[in-house]
Length: 378
Ligand code: ADP
Image 1: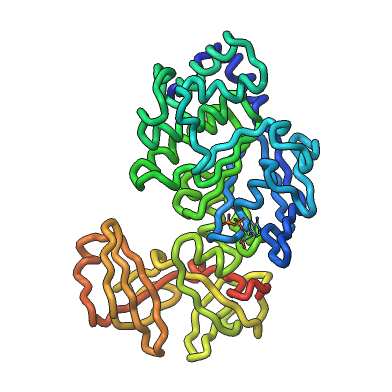
Image 2: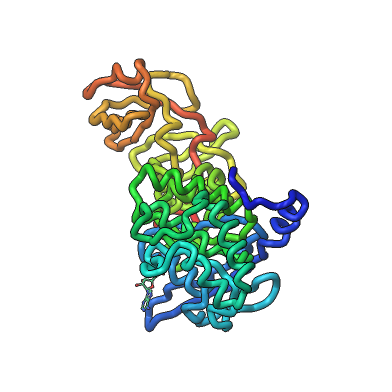
């Protein structure tokens, strides 16, 4: 990829030095009786890309603004390489920021926009010229120095905003919904591009979004937020495969949920629903016979038409939703409950019709034990 033109050794040294370790410890913000951020604790490795993901009002922006310095914490610490910056003013923190509405200065050229943070830092004219040229290569806009923001597309403007945030080589970069104003196709391109730039500069990054696909695509780890608290932190794969709560299983991807009481049998565990349906579930130290638990079952893990699997049920297809690469089926089971099934749109999948009676099957390990919706431990 187009990177800053440097001797390899110098580039490597810069990469290694750039990213800071960032620790948020018990970070809390209270507004009247609203706890906007509640004991947020995260240990972010140098160069790591971490995303705060959650619905509107879950505390993502408040958390980010505390790191940026625009919101003072009610309690907690923010350590950058071990130094607490929680009460330093924003301009002293040396943090790069890109926000959806953090617009470029319209009356300044691209070069002047990018030079702005360097002038504030009293860099020399020659240093500024060199840095602007390098960072424009990094964001793949070489030669755009003299353009004005209005002469750029939305994607190009966001690249300039990113260039302005990175030009002073901050050890930490914060981004709040930076792609929110772009259309889907461009968003997807920019997601990868931002990720590559972040990797090539090794800048420790906190990214905020409510878009789960964006979070899965870009992040090393994701912190899922709900009601001001972090529900779960993990790699995209961990969150998708092993969600700890119904909230996480539902927010990241789609899930079926089954609830019932745990019963032992044949050295295995079964979940027995109130309707009397027995479903085999993984044996786990966290559950015991008699416990009331919920399991999440991903729609794509259920197979239609195949009678083999640890669990087999029959039902009637009530609804078929074709979404292009996949087809979703809402299947009503004999005892009145429902399962959503998702299959790749292949010829054999396409032959199913509404009203067809089908067999559904899945493996024991496909059911993941989760905390239920109340947020309490099962
Ligand atoms: P998100 O970024 O996830 O949408 P926010 O951090 O913006 O969430 O908000 C979290 C909660 O804090 C919300 O209930 C919001 O209404 C409240 N909140 C945020 N900022 C303020 C403020 N300045 N004054 C009062 N309440 C606020």
